[in-house]
Amino acid sequence: MRSLHNIFRLGLKELWSLFRDPVLMGLVIYTFTGAVFAVANGVRTEVRNAAIAVIDEDRSEVSDRLRDAFLPPYFRPAPLIDLNQMGPAMDRGDYSFVLHIPAGFEADLLAGRQPDLLLNVDATAMTLAGNGTAYIRSIVQQELAGFLHSGDTDLPATLIPRAWFNPNLHSSWFFAVMQVIGNVTILSVVLSGAAVIREREHGTIEHLMVMPVTALELMLAKIWANGLVIVSAAVLSLLVVVQGVMGIPVPGSIGVFALGAGVYLFSVTALGIMLATFARTMPQFGLLAIPVFVVLYLLSGGVTPLEAMPEPLHSLMHLSPATHFTSFAQAVLYRGAGLGLVWRELLIVTCIGTVFLALAQSRFRKTMAAAR
Image 1 (tube, one colour):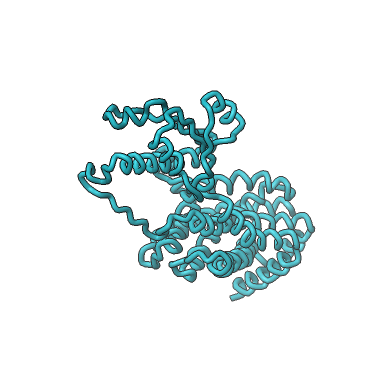
Image 2: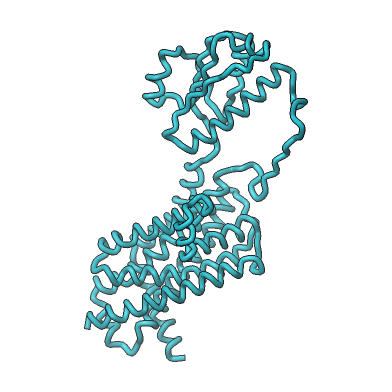
């Protein structure tokens, strides 16, 4: 009981120190409000307002039909340009796509010669290039089928796609929730590590060393205090910003997500404390923390699918708690999974967190002993 009392009282001190730090509190508030809104509305994977031009050397009915098929909001109005204008325009980045319709295209099409259309793509924007090419291919095929009055009669079967969990394929639905999930990782490392650095910079770590508390009690106090702030901010962000302001549905249980986030914070805040023991100042801690949470965020499976990674990296990332938490959060928040389906991820995160906590405790104890 004495140990629990110490952890509770030290945690209250951590909360008071955090609330008195305007920079960190401003970071928490912005990260779960403005950053979520900006990323959800600014980052898009679907084609929207893409710049396309047409080189029409055929000047036929079918070429006019193809040009008029590129409509907003997917494409901007497609101007006609000459072949010698294409190179400079692509170099300047004026157009992402240039469709070249050769002379005699309609005549060859009606004669059954299967003429070629050339689509020039600016692949510097890879997502737009890939998705836009698929859009344009589909549009061209539909228009040519309509022109030839072939419809779907040549197809042996009809494919009817049904998108689950995001019926209209809105990227904002994905990025808003993923930003909240990613922010949990980033702030867990930053706040817990900053708490240790703050003790050293303010000279209060010497006070803690003469108190009848252990290194584990100090660590657990920092973990529950910072974890409470982060989980509360994440839940409020989902309720107020994602669901309230942006109108994005979250079909899963936010309570189950909060439980999983609390378990996840147990491991990631321990990692932040361990990193802080290697740094003497806040800038040094920042240099250590940035590569860590960037790797955790980018390779957790939320931004890059795990299946697309090389096999050694794919296996290595299963040792990261962020990978299992991302899988857990996506299953709960996107697909409405309950504890019965995601308990394995929580168990794995708990095991990894125990290892991180043991390593952090060992390092933290050595740091306090060296400070004596």
